[in-house]
Image (cartoon, rainbow, N blue to C red):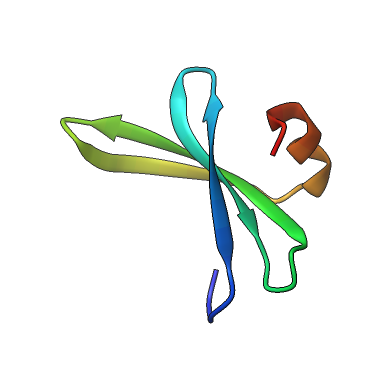
Length: 58
């Protein structure tokens, strides 16, 4: 996600923090799931498949 115009929407993924990312212009881009420990992001997995957005109601 580089440049201006990106938008993110918080979503949940099996109890983990995550967000849906939308490219400039509104196109679905990816779901990003975070591993959080002690208040810090310790890991991230990115799923670049717009078909997944329907599973997250994003």
